[in-house]
Image (cartoon, rainbow, N blue to C red; front, top):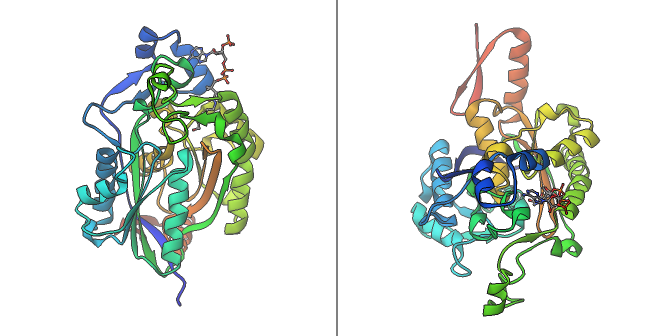
Length: 359
Ligand code: UT7
C-alpha cells in the first residue's frame, strides 16, 4: 500500500464570550492579580455561559475547522472528541457533536487523557489514516472546567478556563503531518490531579457533596515538578522519531498551564523562550483545548505559518504526557518556501499550498 500521511487542512477554535479577569477574582477570593501573574502568567480566562456546554463549544470549533478545510460534516469518516468534561456520563459527548454537526452515521468517540487528550487524539487519527482505514478525521479538544472547580478554592479556580479547538486531518500521499510522536502515562501520580467523587469510586452522596469532593483537586507543586521533568524528555523522543533536531523546529507549542513551567522547559532544553508559542495569559489552562487553541490562534494571526515545523508538547492528569512533531504543509512546500526566501521570491497561498510567484 502507498504510504499515507495525515495533512491538517482545517482548524478552528471557540472560546465563550464571558471573560473573568484576575481582578474579578480578587473581589471574591483571598488572591491578587500580582500573585496569579507572578506564579502562573495568567491574567484572564473565558468562562462558559449557562446553556453553553462541552458539546456546543466542540460543535462550534468543529464547524469552523470544517469550513476552513472546505468540507461538509457528512464528508467525515471519524470524529474524535478529547475531553474530561463531557456534558453527561452517558451518552458520549462525541455523538452529541456528531449529530449537531450533521455528520449522519459518522463514527465518533471520546478520548479521555486529561490535558493531553488532544495530543493522544492527534496521534490516534494519524494512525487511522496511515493504516488506510479513514480519509478525513475531525479532531476536537474541548474542556469546560469552570463547572468542575470549586470557585472558593484559590489554589485551583484561578488556573482554568473553558474552550474548544479543532483540526481536520485528511489523507494524502505527500509527506506531511505528524512525523513523530511520544505518548506516556504514569498512574502512580494519579492523586496529584483528581476529582475524587466525580466517578464510580466515590458515588455522589450528601457527604461527598458537602465536602466538595466532586471538584478537581490538585497538588500543584508535584504537577509542576512532573511537567518540568517530562517536557524536554518527551520532545526529544518525538524529534528522534521524526529524525529532526530542535534547531529545525520553528515553534514549540506547549500545553498552556503555567508560564514558569514553560520558562523552565525552555531553559533545560536550551531554547529561547520566544520560540515557544504562549497565549495562556488570555485563556488560562484550558486542558485538552489548550494546544489546538494556541495552534489556531497562531495560524489565524499569521504568527505561525502553515509551512512551519511545529513541536507540540503536553502534560497533565493521569499523570500523562504527549508530544508530536507536526509539519502541516507538505515538506516540499516548506523547502520551496525556504528556497523562495533565499532567492528573493515571494510566496503565496492557494488552497493552503504555498506557491512561488516572481517579485
Ligand atoms: O494541566 C496540568 C495541570 N496543572 C498544572 O500545570 C499546575 C502546575 N502547578 C502550578 O502551576 C503551581 O504549582 C501553582 C500555580 C498551582 C501554585 O504555585 P506554587 O508556586 O507551587 O505555589 P504553592 O502551591 O506552593 O503555594 C504558595 C503559597 C501558599 O501559601 P503558604 O502556604 O505559603 O502560606 C498558598 O496557599 O501561595 C498560596 N496560594 C495563593 N495565594 C494567593 C495558592 N493559591 C493562591 C492564590 N492566590 N490563588
